[in-house]
Length: 328
Ligand SMILES: Nc1ncnc2c1ncn2[C@@H]1O[C@H](COP(=O)(O)OP(=O)(O)O)[C@@H](O)[C@H]1O
Ligand code: SF4
Ligand SMILES: [Mg+2]
Image (cartoon, rainbow, N blue to C red; front, side, top):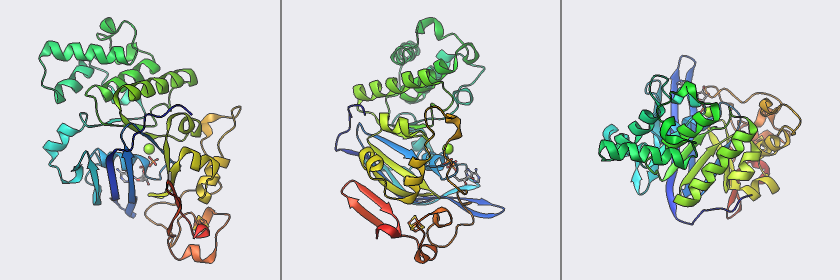
């Protein structure tokens, strides 16, 4: 574990967030009552199998959920004292990038192939800061240097396809931090990178965080990354946070059977790392949730009661809770 930059000051509070999609199969409750907070300088990890609502939670925070079919049904997302769900689209456009920024998984799809690297970084800065053209270019150069792009000045004239995957990911990172946001959301940003480049990229994020008190939400399926990067972890299943705790709580005392199963299924070093988790059974489809605990069909500890009523949230310590009848 690296030394943490986390402080006690809460910068972001998400309260009972619900984001649903209307589909021809029925209403998909992609995010269904998610609450958490984030402190200044802290890194919060979000883990869980595919389809459990991690990305939709983050898109909701950016107000980028496609409407329709999506809809933020209820909740609060208070960033720096302001509820983002109450802002107009124009106000939200100003906040996106400047106070809260998102780096998504695939650096190729988040860079436009027809524009140079320099112009794409500059565009992000121009949108949010009132600088002269010269000032914008100077700042673009500075952020590219900050993310360790060698020969940044000449690289600014390159197109995305002229760069390696790792380099492109750094450019995406540069765009993310170009306006010095308070919160950076990284949605599986290293999935497509090889291990060495991944390690460099993570170190870079940590360095930037230490310099700027940046708070990071890191979505990953890799518990190795969680151990290296995060202060706290939220485990998501079927649109809900089922366990939350410090990294130590989660690794030393995983208390929800789902967390336990995730940790037990972490692939060993020599195995295929692409193979994510292999817990028996499938996550439920979110338009057809079973009554009671959604993990019940896959849970080795399931009791009758689990199938009829959603479990209560049990506080295990000041920093640690889980929602499971076995703990109640
Ligand atoms: N545009 C959409 N229309 C309908 N359902 C969607 C849409 N986007 C996401 N979903 C559904 O929301 C659920 C959560 O998805 P997502 O947040 O992307 O999962 P994760 O990031 O954890 O893999 C999934 O069941 C997915 O099918
Ligand atoms: S509530 Fe019951 S089914 Fe759900 S995780 Fe706990 S023991 Fe398993
Ligand atoms: Mg996702």
